[in-house]
Amino acid sequence: MKMNAFASELERQLADSNGYNQLGFEERLALLVDSEWNRRQDNKLTRFIRNARFSAPSATIEGIEYIEDRHLDKIKMLRFATCQYINDGRHIILKGASGNGKTYIACALGNAACRKYKSVRYIRMPELLDELSIARANGEISKVIKNYKKVDLLILDEWLIRKLTAHESYDL
Image (cartoon, rainbow, N blue to C red; front, side):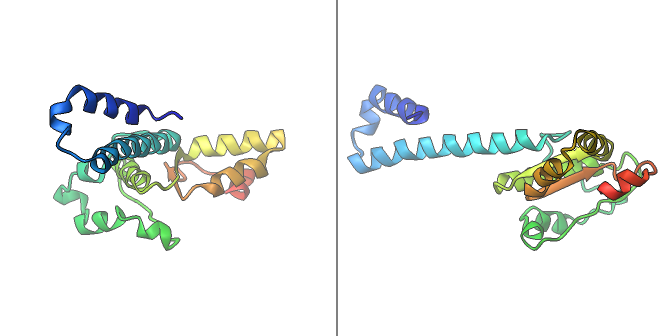
C-alpha cells in the first residue's frame, strides 16, 4: 500500500510506548494518518517543483531582497504569492535591467504556485523556440503546445532577447 510514513510512525510509537500509552486509539491512529498525509503532500510538492524545471528551484518569496533601487513592492509580492492572479487568468510581466533579479522573482512566484499545488513550467525563451522548431519539423507542434497549455502557470524567461524569425513569431 506504500504507506511508509505510516509504518515508520507506528514503529516510533511502539518504540516509545510510554509516551504514547496515554493516548487513545483514535489519537494514535490520527498521528499515523497525519504522518502519511504529510509525507504524501511533501512528495507532491517536491514533484511539482521538479517538474517546473526552475533555474533557481530554491527561490522563495521570503528570499526576495527589497532593496530600494529595485523598486519592488513587498505587499504586491505577497499578494502574488497567494496565486490569485493565476485563478483570475492574469499575467505578470517582470521588466528591468539585466541582473536585477527577474529570474529569481519569477522562480519565487513559481515556487509559491507549486506550494499551492498548481502545475508550473519554467522555460527560457530561446529553449522554447528551439523546442517548438524541432516539434514543427517532427510534426508534433500541436502536441507540444497542448502540453504547455496544461500547466497552470507558464514562466517564460528571457522574453524576446533576440529578434524572432517569421516561424518563431507565428509559433508564439
